[in-house]
Length: 365
Figure: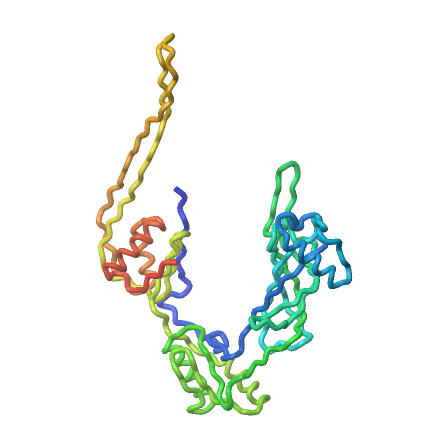
């Protein structure tokens, strides 16, 4: 049985104090956000690795529509057999404060059965936002970070060939209005909801400006009084973002990935003294063929059957005393002393949580 590696987060031990972080790493300005864009396009110039048009009729329809817009009219019922064309979805992220004429990166993903987008060129594709308005136009040569080859029924593929990227491949055509605050106030929103961290941010802002400048609205939102002049407001925000704040200690949590067997703990996890006994159970099923031959000249038929054997073994395990752990390093040593594999450790942690010995929130993903 393949053993799956267990990962413990040991970088933040309880004995090591938390380091200060900038406010820009802990919070974001309300209303300043990215906007997702998407578009449907055509990649041309592929080396015979495009969509099989008999199985992707939307690719043919797109080519007919594109040629019609360019003044090329095809006879009705024309059956196009194209190999160098692929239908793709184009996605991009419009950065805040982006202005018309600026460029942004786009990702091109095949939506048909194209074998590869390598060497293709994306034809001019409008990029729309959630409101249906066009905010960008994408076009350019697709760069694919993989390669593939096939011959005589054998094929080799390195990385992914059906997704590519165009650096600076889209031009912003419409700006998204972004307001920095409402009236004399701006709002900071922390990335995680924590009363302690929010209060420390308020104290740091008031200490560097003037008492009463910042006010905590809730565990995630901070209201800050800022200058009304745009130039002064930008300078004020620049100073604000670079203030150092030491985040409060997070709640104790253990994250268990049941699919990979990974276990990650933060620095606040502790253990109470408990006793654990865990034995491995193994089931072995074997089958061997049994052939029954009829006597000579009996006109009988040979019959093939199987004889199955099931063997169940359970390893005995003594009751092990798990000592109390006051910090993460002691918890790791106590769990390692059990000698359990990652999958068994997941079951043990769940049992410890149920018994009240694991002083942490247990989350299974």
